[in-house]
Length: 382
Picture 1 (cartoon, rainbow, N blue to C red):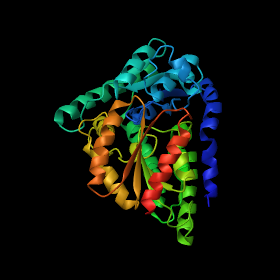
Picture 2: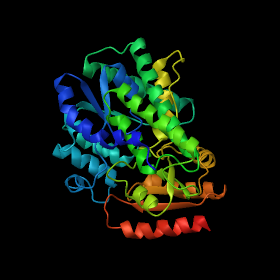
Picture 3: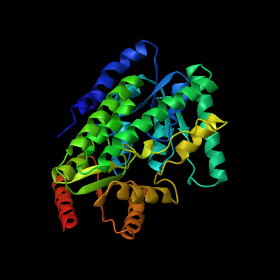
Picture 4: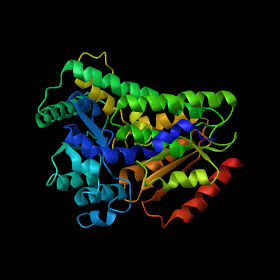
């Protein structure tokens, strides 16, 4: 059974694509970003709207490969291909974009991209722990704030930043509440629908409209819980998906998992819950530092060591009664590929089986993946 209130989220991205040019004509300042390290509160506080840029479809990869090596990860090639062909309406209508150095491939992509689109590139520290890292990242977020103010011709005030923080915190809280519905057996929301919900936050220009529809999902989901019904039959094998960002257009592994008879109860990656785990402390005296600290907590594989990700997955596996974890890595994504070994070892010590799937955006390996997923689910059942 699917919650009827989820239907609104099916068309979030097409709606946003159709509306973005009209918003620019009304002088709404669109600011594009690719990664969850982009401090969206600063854009909102400056009167702009942060929107995720296109990066999850196979079609523009061939264009991206005109400038980028073929052995780059699919996400980077797709991002760049969309940008150079003007096929991403959000990129076309953005005043500028906020990039970040979460991997060497993206760093070089932004170098190329900055030749035809104004770009702010945040230098992400290589670790998240320690005073030096905290101060360095704080200085980068301060620089980002100054550049946003300069490019948009505004001054970010304490009041506007506090309002933006409260707005983002409320949305994060609601998304966590929706995800928590899947602690139940049967889980209330399928993995594909959970992805649509987390994805839609980045493509809804009216925050109250998004919140209203998300509250409807939560209300309906709680009723489904009380009635003992869900998106899957009771007792369906329960899977957590982790790894690289997986958006609409590159969700083939998620589809295969659920078509093979398992339920995805939680998506830990960047397109899923990773960006919604932590709130900004609105009571901290320096709100810019509070924003910086929230984003530095992001458990990305670019951080070494990245023990926070292991702790989160162990906790979530317990809270959501997971039977196994599927770790998705893109071919050419070295940080997530290396970390998959670390993750598998850490979860094995806790008795949680892990399967890594290394793939790209093409459909060529679909049946091979399906065979492996079916065997993994059979192993869980026995």
